[in-house]
Image 1 (cartoon, helix red, strand yellow):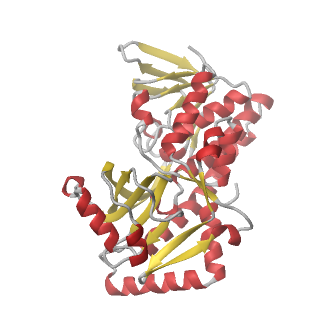
Image 2: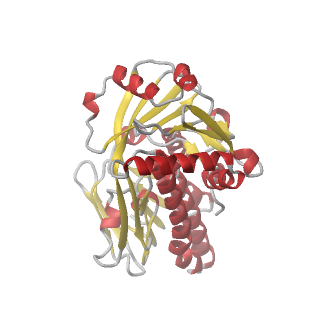
Length: 391
């Protein structure tokens, strides 16, 4: 087999890149190690910047998003027993975010790809990337029957996440990694209950961080901070709901509708960046190159911005045979990545309890939050980053 771009990974970034390239007549094959059902069952983020929404529209996969997505003009920061709203739309000249689950983004893109007759190979194993330091890279893999295949290509896009083969294929010493592990995780539940508020509420409390979010007007997503080594099995639904409400202002806690959860998990928090993001004809995209804590709602949006930069470079490469856009990809992507890493780190340190900082750290957080909600300049800085910095 041969294709122009071999895409490793069928998450949102791989599917989005493939659909954008299909729109300009560039051939792609996507290889995915998991089954189709497993990919569509992943529960992930759900807050989209306008730039991400626009890219999905350009890919022809935003009809359902526009019909069902929830536009949010603000968020609330809860501390000292009260919720303080940040009007992001007013502070940024009309910008907003859209709540629409990553699972739904993946489904829309996958159905669009399938309707176009484009090739995605699921349940692959032993995927290996070859000769991407030269002009004739290729990929080998085994299908579900154990048969080995080879795909020649012009470019390889590594969209296969933090644990994927793409970053691991980079020669030792060619890549520099930066990482920060946080001493806590997020215990999250999904429940078929209406959300506590029409916008997200981020809570700083002496017992730890909490977040009230949603996926739809009937489906809520809630989180509480727990130790990094916590086990999800020790958390019954009753214990979770009790702890969540303890960390919220009384008025917000009273608005929480309790119901059985249908998904419960603990996600560790880390900041991670690998650079550069280009190695010859191999380009790293999204979680393959960087991870951010979910506090700033940047993970999926950063993957989309990587796709935008790479797509622009590939369009130039295939239409004009120019390498300029591809040569600039890593630097452009990383400039935006590090700003999002900074914002996510800042939100995380401001809202979570860090055992090592003690009472001094708690007072600093309280001062930071009080300044933030009473200073238009500080609120504007938060709003600009939350809705998404320009590409």
